Amino acid sequence: MDIVNAHIGKELYKTIISTATNNLIADEPEDVGGKDLGFNPNELLAAALAACTSATLRMYADRKAWDLSEVKVEVSFERDAKLNQSFMKRKIELIGNLDEEQRKRLFTIANSCPIHKTLTNPIEIETSLV
Image 1 (tube, helix red, strand yellow):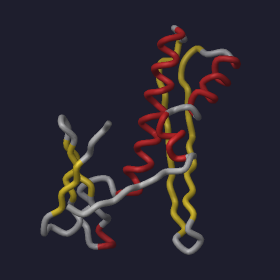
Image 2 (cartoon, helix red, strand yellow; image 1 turned 60 degrees about the vertical axis):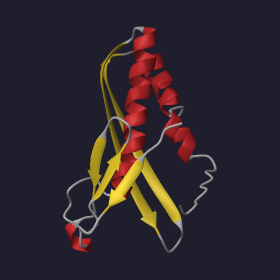
Image 3 (cartoon, helix red, strand yellow; image 1 turned 90 degrees about the vertical axis):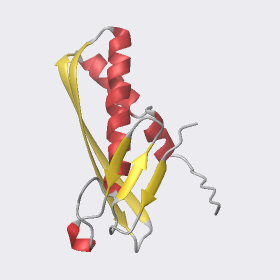
Image 4 (cartoon, one colour; image 1 turned 45 degrees about the vertical axis):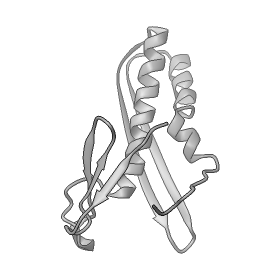
């Protein structure tokens, strides 16, 4: 089980996010009162998909010994509060000596990354106060 902790003090919107071995700062943009010291929550969600996609493609290509030198992933995230809908767009650039079949297979594999599967299936969130 992955465990992530978040802590916010008095400094407006600066949030320290930590795991057992890593830390990062999340913040809100200046136009909503933050200082833009780190990724905002929407960017973190998009970053999770981009990172998972990149790593999944790298792992698969390495296992197959394919000549994939680089993977570039761009993810945009937009939330329409009025419609209660979220929209993500993912663009993947595969750099290397790949034939069309390999490229098609990697496209399919991108949709199999764990974060993609999580975001495209029902999610249950259980919340408790301590």
